[in-house]
Image: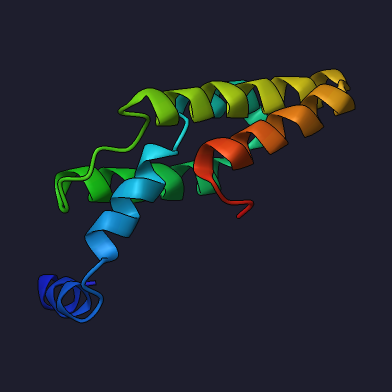
Length: 106
């Protein structure tokens, strides 16, 4: 996507920067380590490329920046560790807490 395309999308979808910033704040860098080799290298590469684009081109820093997003990151790490360890009840609890922290299920 070229600069003109980005400018067009940003001018058409006026809330895009705020939406991307909110979504980027929920990204959990530790999840990449927790998931380890279960992520395909191709997917990991594409994800990191998108995150670099957000930061370098749009000036949006991925990862938690405030209390609410840091809490969400901790809960998402707990969810992943619970799933890997077979602690389904704790995983369910973490998912519900993440939804409360985001104020949405999605």
